[in-house]
Structure formats: structure tokens, C-alpha cells
Image (cartoon, rainbow, N blue to C red; front, top):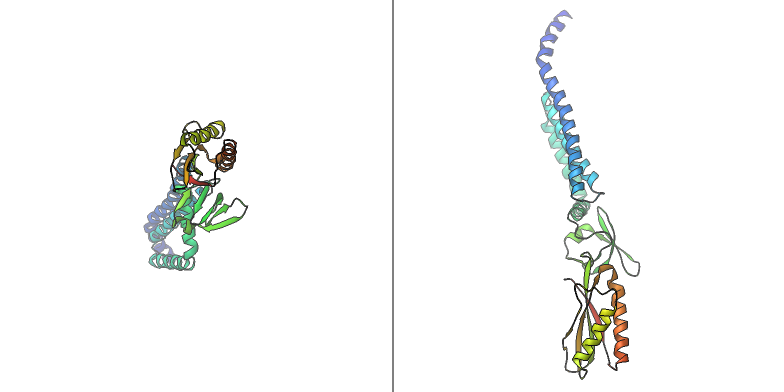
Length: 266
């Protein structure tokens, strides 16, 4: 026992600096990681990132950094960490292959929440689907159609397809066209349309509405009606203008065989 104690003391003295250094590395490393996590959270909030993703990203970064610190501390104790790194890498590869599709949706959801091509409440068109953004989840985007149907679109589909944000700019120009008989007086028809536009409170004065003549055929005269409005008024204004102009045409004896609309994104 005396011999064992005599051999243990020099080994403990020799091993003590490594132990102290490992403990300091662990304590200081975890403290720095926690501080960095708080700074990262503040930076993301200052940049108006989505609140649903801020704690998630911070926790992922914290876990990864703490695992790296633990591996470094283990190597200080003389533990062979190569096998641990290989095991973690193999486990990560296996999980990645098993969840390949889900991870793609997740990565796309993170990109959507960071770069914000649209937000909740915007009316968008993704591929052939159009509706109001009801919810942005990590894996899916939920749209609500005008007839109250819910469309669930995987986020990887969203980021790989063209996205048309119809109302996200705050203002929207309605590109409407009205057709009249070719014999109709151009100035008279334009004046009637402009009077309807200027009398509607939903039509903005700036940018000012405009009415253009654009003949599309030999037998019909086409008048393009271009009012600007707030995005939330676009649907109501479309139907109001259509009805008011039709009434004005009937009142002035102008036959209007067709009415149409397209959303102008300018």
C-alpha cells in the first residue's frame, strides 16, 4: 500500500494540470456557448426573424458546440476520440438517409422563415395553387383558398418552384379590361370608366388610375382599366368596379360583351 501511494502521488501531480485544464475548458466552453447562444438569439430578433425558428436554431447550435467541447475535454484526458467522431458521423449519415425527404422539407422551411418570400396573410400562387398563407410550418406551408379549402404544400416544393406573392407588396394594381362595340366613341367610354374609378373610395389617388384603349379585334374595342388599391381591397374592388362600370355602360347605351381581369404585379 505504501508503494502504491508513493507511485500514485507523482502520477497525480503529473496528471493534475491536465485535469485542471480539462475542467476549465469544460466550464469556460459551456459558459461561452451559452453567452454566444444568447447573442445569436438577440441578433436574429433584431433582424426580425420568425420567433418560431429562433429558439430552434439556437438550441441546435448549442448542442453541436457542446458536443465538440465534450470531445475536446475527452481528448485532454487521453481518451481516444476518433472512434466517437466516427460513430457520431455514421449515426448522422444514417439519420440523414432515413429522413432525407423530411430533412429537405425542414431545410426549405428554415430558408422560408429566414428569407421570408411571403408571410402569414399574404395571397400567393405556388405552382398551380393559389390562396392565402394560413400558417408557415417547419415542414409545410398551409394555404387557405377563397372557398375555405386548406392546401398543404411541402416546403421543398415551395423553394423549388416559382412563387408569386400577389398581395405582399401592400399595393396592387388590378389589370381589368372592358370590351365595347367597335363603333363606340373612345373618349366617351374612357371618361365613363375614369369617372367610376375616381368615385370609388377604394381606388387610390396615388398611384393614379389609368384607362387605356387597346383594340383586340376587328369587331370589339378593348379598354384597359388599371386602378391601384390596397392589397386587402383587391377582390372586393374587382367586383365593385365590374358592376359599377357595367351599370354605367348600360346607362349610357354602351354594349359591353365581355369583362376580364388579371392581377398586375407592378
